[in-house]
Amino acid sequence: EAGVTQFPSHSVIEKGQTVTLRCDPISGHDNLYWYRRVMGKEIKFLLHFVKESKQDESGMPNNRFLAERTGGTYSTLKVQPAELEDSGVYFCASSRTGAGYGYTFGSGTRLTVV
Amino acid sequence: KNQVEQSPQSLIILEGKNCTLQCNYTVSPFSNLRWYKQDTGRGPVSLTIMTFSENTKSNGRYTATLDADTKQSSLHITASQLSDSASYICVVSVRGNTPLVFGKGTRLSVIA
Image 1 (spheres, chains in turn cyan, purple):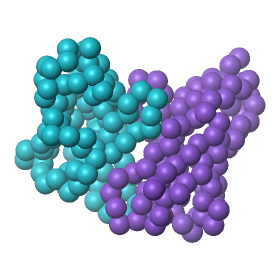
Image 2: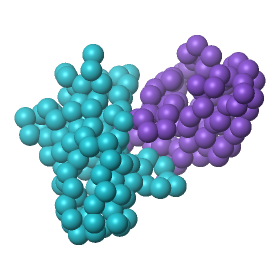
Image 3: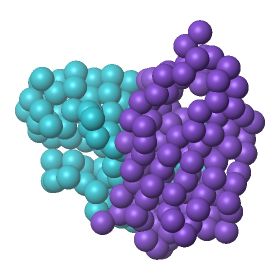
Image 4: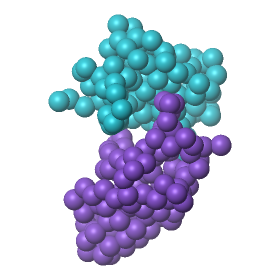
């Protein structure tokens, strides 16, 4: 079984530019989550998809962040325009639906805004 | 406020020695508690998951304990190996709510 794949692994962009992160979950996993770790802080929730629907987006920091999951397969997280405080590692995780199923995390995308 | 506190922040031990990492949480209502291992440049990998009724769970040389009354958990690593060097993150799930609550992790370094 292939794991959760994230692309790119690293991205360095200038303040004001746009960046799009991609996550390919494990096939058959309806749940897809985005999390973020800012330097020195704990990993924090951004949002949760069930198939193509946003189940919970309470963790999205502001309207510069836009997440999509068209067709319920892969997901993208776009940051536009990027700010310095957006730097961090963005993790994607997926899971099956039902209690007790574990999360499988991707390796993350390290975003640096300069 | 739902929080997970871990200690120590970092730890250095000699190869072959045992160690115990601590986790205190204030998450309510509690659903389950997970320990993850995160190698540098990788995503977190699950080690154990425990529900309210479970006191201990083992995964090879890793043994996690849970005291739901005091809201404390520990992760014991036996006969440490160099490959155990990583961040160990305590994560608590809130019942009826999606987001996992993460601790900041303990950075473990195992040296020869």
